[in-house]
Length: 518
Image 1 (tube, rainbow, N blue to C red):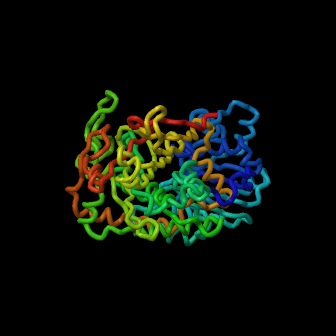
Image 2: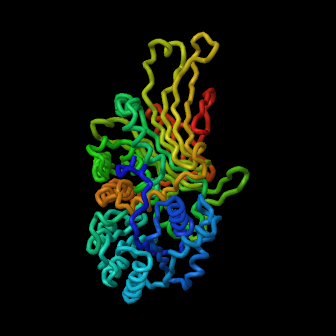
């Protein structure tokens, strides 16, 4: 639910988009395709320009060829219409830039004035930093000192995760940015907040009287959030070995999904109201005050050699650029509590890891079961109702209920009613970066993280990381291709629960009723 009425497909206000790191993987896989999709759908009018910035030498022709190849490989639309492609490509220019040299920024400012005049842009400037976090501050200072923030229009800074390594480094980084940009000008991207089904959580809750009255401790037994990956660290070994699963996925993606599930209805239809409610959830997380509490409620794992689908897989310590003695976690699971009136006592089970059996992001809401000794429960072992929100790679929702088996004498069977959004929309589902770039250009900060959100998330995560430093021996091993350490199963078993199947792995005896494919 976007509080700026995303149904209006109006073009974003004209601006110059500065892509720092334009020769990198993020620009190639996500940013160029996102811009082309927005242009094709009329969400970018003709009054825009894109300046690619990196140290590598390129001329405009080479840069536009890079953009073309990116679109052909990764975009949901292909550049088949040559007239459309030519118009789009004409908006792209490239400049080789040493980001530590302010003179280069002054030259960039002169180029910006030319682009403003050529495309009729009123000085609006959006700076996208697809760079390492330690470069955010120096680039911001040079944008200011190079005169790029003196234009008549608005100025926005879009930055990628990770936002710091811990709370201390995040505060230092935020202090640098705040010397140049106001908080409302900073857009911190967590691309999971741009995913359609994550945004759909708000609509599901607040637009359906069926769910919101039940969305509390009186009716929900537990919540399970799974972000699993089949890949290892691939070429990111150097970065990942200094980050780990907790910082790479837990501090941002998982905690953001918890806030979307657990937040109260916003008091008004405004981005800041929604973000206020998310911060309240993060501040209500039960802090882990001791190493013993962390040991009881958090499982930390690292994959060893294993196999999947007949393919032998190396262990984490055998991966390229990884320390052979590394104690970095590639998996973690935890039992989290939100200590407020709505959720008191309801466990949120979270898990994420690499080299797991399937790639998926899912949220499972398990409702409390009917009493054991009434009506059908006396004769049947009834399973609980489930609401499952599939975020990735398939998008959709399913609801599992109990129903009478046709032709039987009141025999009960589980039935799953499914809405498959991916089946309905197919490959034309908007990508997260499209939605977020469009929102940033329009000044809609609903699905970007505010500084106090970042600080509250680091406060929670830092306590876990500190306990792990004290108890390095708590690192568990799991075979690549498995579902992680056995201790993660015991987190739920001790409470009488278990991890529900994910990624369409149907349970036995469930009848599926699908919808959404029109």
